[in-house]
Length: 546
Image (cartoon, rainbow, N blue to C red):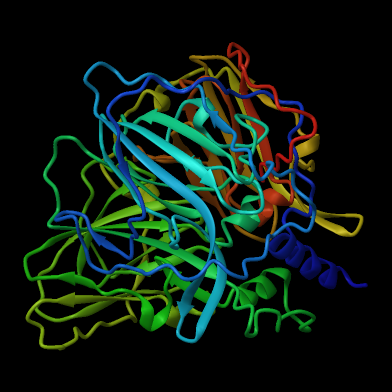
C-alpha cells in the first residue's frame, strides 16, 4: 500500500471515525466543583443565527430545525452512557457573580438533526439547539455568563470557549479541565465577560469529528460603552463533505498530494451553515455603518474580498489601534481566527462579498449584500488588482508590555512537522506527538516566548488556550505593530515568535486548529506549577480532548 493511500485512509479515519492518533488524557489535572450561587438568570434558548441584525435585535432569517433522524456518531468505539433513568449534573468551579453584576443564562442542547446545507443537499448533523451554527451567545461586557450544556447525543461532548480567557474549569477540554459530558448528562460553565470581542464555541471532545458535524456557534461580547454600528452581522465560515456526492472521488487519484485530496473531499463551503444560493443576504441601506464578524470554524483558510473601502478593526477579539482604510485587499482568515471588518454603505447598488484564494469551491462562498432602494442593480467590481492584506504591518505601531520584556521565564521552540508512524500519518511538535510531549511549565506572572517553526508542507494555525499573545517576529523580522491574537497562521517555511504573560492560572492546551492535525498529534499541554486543581480524571472516562 502506497504512502499516499495511507494518507487518504488516515484522513478518512479522522473525518468518519474520530481521532486516529489516539489522543487521550487520563492522568492530568483540571477543575471541577460545585455550582455558582444562584442569581437572577435570564434564560435564552433556540435562537438561530442565520445571520442576525444584532443592532436592532431583529432576526433577518429564522432557520427551521430539521428532524433528528439518521445522525451517525463519528466514533465506532463504544462510549460510556448514563443509565436511561439517571441524569447526572456536573459544574465547573465557577467564579461567583459580583454584587449587582448582570447574569445571563443560556441552555445549549447537543442533539441530532438533519440540515439543508446546499441546494439538494441535506445531511445528518450534530447541533447546539437544533441549528448550524448553534445559538449565538451574545452578551454585554461586564455580564456574568452561565451556560448549561445538556447532552442528547449518543456520545460524550463538551463546550470550549475558543479564544476567551475563561477560568480553567470552564475551558471545556475533556480529561484536562472536566470529564466529557456523557449522554443524558448536563454540565454548567460560567465566566465573567470582561473582554469584549468576537469569539466562538465548539466541542473539544473528538473535535476533528464533532466540529465537522456542526457542534459550534458564536460567542459575541459587545463593549459596554461605545458607539454601535447600524448593522452587526456574524458570518461563520466552514467546509463540509457531501456524503451523497463526490466526497470520496479524490481517493486514489494519481498525482494528487494529501492536501489536494483533502481539499477535493471537502466540497461544500458554507456561511452560517448555508452554501451558494441558500446563503442569507445581508440587508442594509445607504449610509449604514456595518460590522462584519468573520469566524473560521473550518479547516481551510479563506481569502475574503469586500468591495469598496473598509477597515479591519479587530482580530481574535482584540481591537487594532488606529486601523487604516483599505481597498482592493484580500483578508485571509485561517481556521480558528476571527476578523472584524467595518464599512459604510456608500453605494445604492447591491454587491457581493466573495473569496479569492486557491480553494476549489469558492463559487459557493458568495455572500449577497442587499442595499435598500437598489432595484436589483449590482455594483461592478474589478478583481484584477487585488492584493493581500498584511495584519502584521497594519495599525499604529506602539510599545507594549510584552515588546519590552528582556527576560522570559520560558522560551520554547515548537518545530511543526509530520511523519509516518507505522501505517499512520502523524503531526508532530519537535518530532513527537501529544502523548509523548512533556507539558510546558510556567507559574503565575511569568513571561513566555513561543516560537512556531513550520517545517511541513501544509499550514498550521496554532492556538493557545486561555491567553492572548503578541506576535513579536515573523521570519526574523520584528513586527512593529502591536498585534494581539490567540490563533496565528504559520505557513510552510515560516517561523513566527509570539509572547504572552502567564496571567490565567490553570491547565491549558496549545494545538493546531486544523483539527485533523491536532487529532493527529500536534498538541501540547501548558500547566501552571502554582495552580492546584480539584479535578482528577478517572482512568476509565472516555475523554478525547482532540
